[in-house]
Image (cartoon, rainbow over all chains, first blue to last red; front, side, top):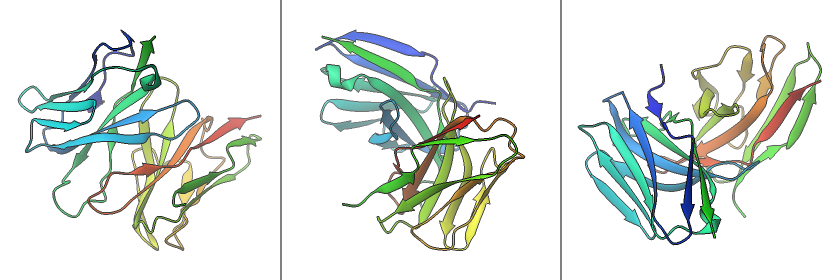
Length: 116
Length: 111
């Protein structure tokens, strides 16, 4: 039972355009969500997060949107750059509001390719 | 320079052998984690530890063992009981209220 799903295995975008990566979850107890970026043969690096009390969080070119009723979140990258080409994972956490050494549940990842 | 060090980067194991993957962090993080990544799949949690001398099973702990004798170190042993050990193994650590930070991983292959 996959509680966090990224249904698009890959996404191809032209440089300068918007990249939209999607993530769905089934467990309504998740209350904190994160996006990680991963290059081949390296560990994931943290990009941006959002708490369930918000519906949007922005950091430079990266914006995460959360739709709790639809159990859906998305990562927008504007403008996309060739260096953004990587695998993007969404992850969900329980009880992140309190003392949390959270166990993250990850999606399968989406390979983003940004063409010059 | 603070970070998480996983060694070795590549590891080969003969069938029937146990092998231990190293994870060291100098970030003074309390919690540490081990994940496994298979091709086309997300990261799956093997074990995690919130404090020294304590650890809990994750979603796929069978065939693995860990220890947490020091705050900085969280080694993972892949035992011969793990039937499909070939994978990319990632270690992470975390301070409260902050996201998990990851090492660069160890790729384990069976000879």
